Amino acid sequence: MTTIVMGTRNSPLALAQTQHVATLLQTNDATLKVTQKSMVTLGDKRLDVALGKIGDKGLFVKELETALMAGDIDVAIHSYKDMPTTGPEGLTVVPVGLRDDYRDALVCQESVLPAGQRTIATLPQGVRVGTSSVRRENRLNQLRPDITVVPIRGNVNTRLRKLAAGEADALLLASAGLARLGLSHHVHQYLGIEEDWLPAPAQGILAAQYRADNTAMAKRVAAIQHRPTVIQAQAERGVLETMDSGCHIPLAVMATINGEQVTIVAQHIHPEAGKNHTVSTVAPVALVYHHGRQLGEQLKGLIC
Image (cartoon, rainbow, N blue to C red):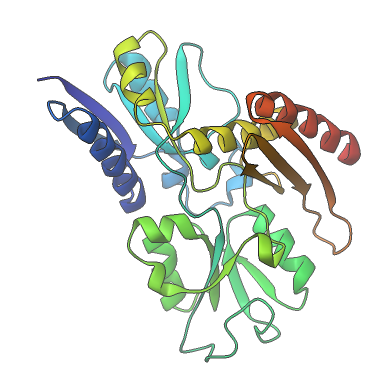
């Protein structure tokens, strides 16, 4: 029997995501034994400061990467949308498993907002909506400049507690995180393509990070990859990497697969309505990363 140590943040969502990947690995190899090692990252510690003020890159991954390089863990599991575009030399990051729901979700405090007032369009004037995402904040300001955006940080459960405590009247969250924790019943509105609301690059996708020289782990991870998810991750991360920015740039990207062709739409979201820059392309599956990077260069040229 082989034993591997999986590293994770110690939030309920991170632990659930890591357990999900562990189950995939053990389903593929019933003889595999998996143990988990959780740790607290800088992004988890500094909940009193907006993410953009304590650094854009690596806030939720540095401690895990240090453990990987030291050999304390064999693989780390991340939300791919939280991963910086560059990492330490000697480590590999790849998408794993099936992409979960890419959409954002609106969660309302029902005691404050009765039925009929629980969508972006029907929220009353002056309502306080909590988010830590510049992308979500800017898009909300475009659609509803009469709404107040308030900074809300912490893991999913913490944010829901802050909502219940009255720190906000509603929240914008990733629906994938709510689903992974069995909390989708809190959602009042899903925000996706049909609502003209694009996600963060690779939102809803999990990533495995391991030492590049660990060929055994590379084979295990490859066995649990999902081809459409890999294609979407390559396309969307290609745009992000060319923009050379962390997860807090107001960038939205969506890759949609149709057979062997992929439509990639990228949008830089300005806080004022009518000032977004949107670019798109259609690429063959084999070249999505290359075309994603080209699209990023095109978008970068428009905003710089």
